[in-house]
Image (cartoon, rainbow, N blue to C red; front, side, top):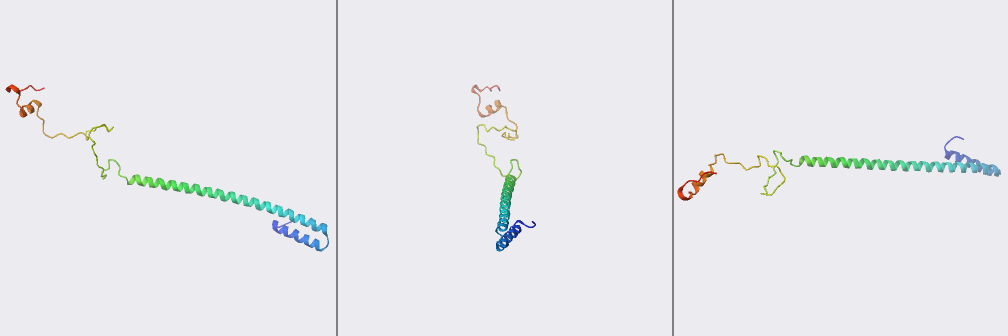
Length: 146
C-alpha cells in the first residue's frame, strides 16, 4: 500500500463498502479490520507527534525563560554599574562631600598629616618667656625654664 495512513484507511473503508454491496461479508470484514488497524496506527502516530510537540514547546518556554532571566540579570548589572559610576567617589576632585569632625572618640581612621591641625607660621616663644610675659614670678626672680 502506498500513501498516507489516512489515504490507506480511506481505501480499505471503500473496499469494505464495495464488498458489502457485493454481498461478500468475509472480504468486507477483512477490509474493515485492515482499515481499523491503520486507524489505530494513525492515532498512535498522532499521539507521538503531539507529545513531541508539547515537549518541544516546553523546552522552548524554558529556553525563553532562561534567556529572559539572563537579560534581566544583565540589565540589573548595567543599572548597578551605572549607579556606581554616577555616585560621587571618595577623593574625587569634583565631589562635594563635606567632612565633619565628630570631635573626640576613635573613628578607626589612621591619622595623617593632613588631618592634624595646622600650626601658625610664626615661631613659638619658649614657655618660660611666655609665662614671664603673662605673670611675674613670685619674689621678682625669673623662673627657670623646664
